[in-house]
Length: 307
Image 1 (cartoon, rainbow, N blue to C red):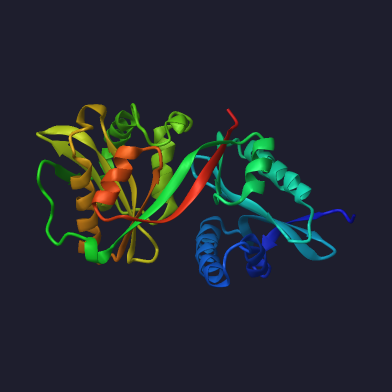
Image 2: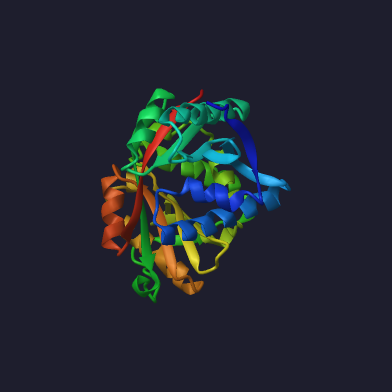
């Protein structure tokens, strides 16, 4: 069989490569996802000045695209990856080559962790990712709240929300670290990357707006943090992080915080607020359902640690 040839993907090849990467989804969903991925890649290219698509690789055999690997290098050096895809007429075994390249990238970038987001029905990815040293840690639930469910008045009941200011950096880092203690949200990942790098990653993933980061107080004590992100499409918002320190958990505060996040989204003319949460974080999942978030997708999370 002819040897596979490795390529970094050019902008001219982008649509064809993404089409293979997403060949397992319906044509309508595929075009929508291709547009979303193109937007992300263009943003990354603007930041890096690259003349190829950052982190998007493909392999060819006889000039035809045989396999695709799509990775995202975060500022904290964690690599996020979509499962490798292969053409229908290619042998399953070439997935080993693609997974090997993914691990090589982790070594090249000194990445502490590689995370793969796998659709539940993609059994081959589970087999070959395990062979490459990955282990399943949980399932990530993607939830969305719509404009019609946003409160029109601020839900000020027990808490006070103070916007972040530029000189609050060390205070924010310290408080976020406190919220990690005993967390039920992917506890196996805590401590892999320094908190400073995680927060810098949040800042650099989308245009940073400090007024969307909040300190949470209850009775003049710091209780936690709320970090929101407004995407490049201004009507879309993300609840990037919500954390309470251990002494303020179990007091039914999360629903008030989530409603405040929805209210801020409403004030800024947002139409959707999304969040992703660990399926095993039962208290958080219940709070989101209580505040009218609905499930729109889920992914199994496979991780390999390199430190």
